Length: 214
Image (cartoon, rainbow, N blue to C red; front, top):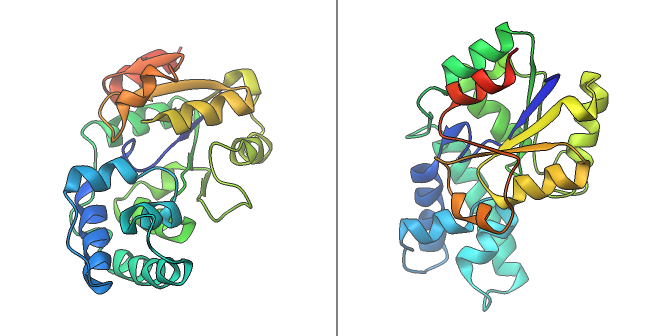
């Protein structure tokens, strides 16, 4: 493989608790009761604006959503590494693939500055050729613009590029860009692979490294 493109939340990092705390802090700011953590986790994957819209519910006005989103982003910036960690084996797998000459990148729907700060804070920022977020382009995943840009940036062949993620959003992004899709079983929404099955499904980053490297 020339290039592996990784989703962030639920794929490289376990950010569940920090996201749940940030969402419920936002709901408290808006005068609402907290949500169950599992409910928050089910809302993750399409970017912060969609997360907050879902967390507030259909009765929230656009003005309320804007106010809540502003609070959420500031709170999350301040608390994004309180409990967030790399999943077991991720660092070792990234080390192995990078040492084997595979280019690595991140494509997430999380805001780019927060995403970069998280991978830097967890000590793996230097592993990636590029880190692109949900506000790096006019469209978010599953639109293929992020993968198309990374193919150009990294000089990678489409047939030798794979998108790695924990949900159907990542599989659809790969399909839209004409690259391979790998699903991970440890993430937020592996059940969504039932409707959008990936080309490869792995239970650990070491398994992916064995598949990728010659």
